[in-house]
Amino acid sequence: MPPETILVEQLSKTYQVPEREGGFAAAVRGFFVRKYKDVLAVQKVSFSIQPGEIVGFLGPNGAGKTTTLKMLSGLLNPTGGTAQVLGFTPWKLEPAYLHSMTLVMGQRNRLSWDIPAADSFLLNQAIYRLPDDEYKATLKELDELLELGPLLKKPVRNLSLGERMKCEIAAGLLHRPKVLFLDEPTIGLDITGQVRIREFLREYNRRSGATILLTSHYMADVTALCERIIIIHHGQLKYDGGINDLSRKIAPFKLIGVTLAGADSHDLGLYGLPVENEEDADKHYIQVPAVEVTNVTARMLTELPVHDITITDPPIESVIERAFNE
Amino acid sequence: MLRIYQRLWQVNWAEQWQYRANLLMYLFYWLVSPVVYLAVWTAIARANGSVGGLTVNDFITYYMTLLIVDQLTSEITIHILAYKIQDGTLSGDLIKPIHPVLTNILVNNLAFKALAFLALIPIWGVLWLLFQPDYSAVSLQNILLVLPAIALGFALSFLFGAALTCVAFWTTRVYSLGEFYWALVLLFSGQFVPLQLMPSLIEQVATYLPFGMAKYVPIQIILGRMSAPEILRAYAVGVVWLVIATLLFNWVWREGVKKFSAVGA
Image (cartoon, rainbow over all chains, first blue to last red):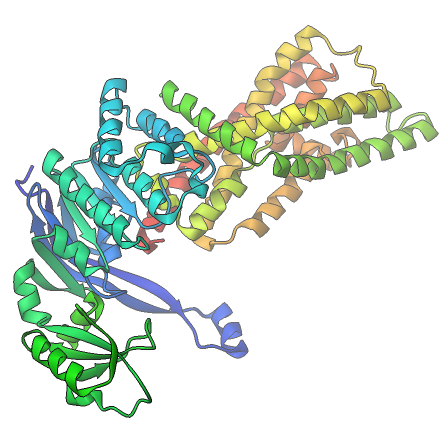
């Protein structure tokens, strides 16, 4: 077995996607002659991860993150390259491999919708052949870290999103996997929920020495958990290294959002680069180099009729998008 | 392994109870056609004295036995597995170290069957009162002879149903193919009418097909209407089909999962 927990070399995945124009005639043509387009989801990606590392796997939507995680967990066959996880070739789906890893995706997959999570847990105990004492000890530990308590007795469909995610994660960890693939483990959770999951993952990693590879849209997830990040974009590896270097390199700016009294007659372009923010249409956002934030904010507060002002990190997606498109 | 099946049973049984109203509706839907046939054929037989050598009681016992046998040998795999292939939720099952079809989906079928059977008992009792069947031809020996046939009939239905559902790995939608398969089953299994009333060509062809094992053969064995050599022959045909079904399912499943992991879901 190689010393690396995860060793990926030249890993590639090309999908063939059927393609046609809109409209009735094209639909009829498409019925007889299908056109396919090659989509290069992952192109010759190489990296290695040491035992016990927590690595953040980042990239905009469609970058190839989930495809890579699916290949590493064994759900997808690559079209090129190799990967070894714990010495196994994942897509052979050997039982010994499935016993030692877990994949938690933001969707429900390990829990039965209609019954309490406790019942699904017992089923997992049988599937992974966990002795009673070991299972109870793990469950106690997970309960303590995630505060599952009363959640386990309610039918899963009656749980809130955050509660369900906690149960999903617990279900995925009952067999004490050595490798964790987490696809958006905090998606849709409120801040408290996110923080709790993060603390849990850090503590779990500390206690068990498990290796964790996680994707997330939330910069906070990554900064809190990962010392190292891997970025892919358009299926290609763009960055692999420390997180501090990354923010210096590609995200040395902040977003300032303001609500102004009166009409839109003020030219915010004087203070920084105006950017669109669809989620919050009432506010106007500008992008400002991180070192100038204090100055710019002070100027805006004195010169403009500011009702409300916020300073935030730019969303990770746009950082990456911008850094690599420039 | 036993423990896995035990826990799977607990989970699936609990799940089926959640949908008991749904199951009851399904049961009523499924009951309509055999009960209509029962009513129509007994009416015809009553008017003519007999139809093709079958008396009123022959029809009553045939269809009332069909209700039980069909419930025991039928399967619902397409309804459990097809959407998991379509929407990709099968992924979650593939990364567990057990075969999803031969464990969870099998047990799901059995749990559904057990609960549906419970619901069938009172309905069957009412039909008994209405039609007053004469079951004097049934012996303990017949019952013992039919048990393996019912198990074989279910095994065949389950494996063929699962293999058929696996076509969804290639076509995504599989229900129309399922309908076509059902038409074959209806025609050749004795579900519509006792096979001896069919044109003799169909009756002959049916003896070489697997479908009779799920309905016609067990019914005839219970009612003592099959001779020992006929029973033996039916079993031989059934076992050959079991081998074929097993190989077919294994192959389609393996290739299907390969396809699934090539295109992603």
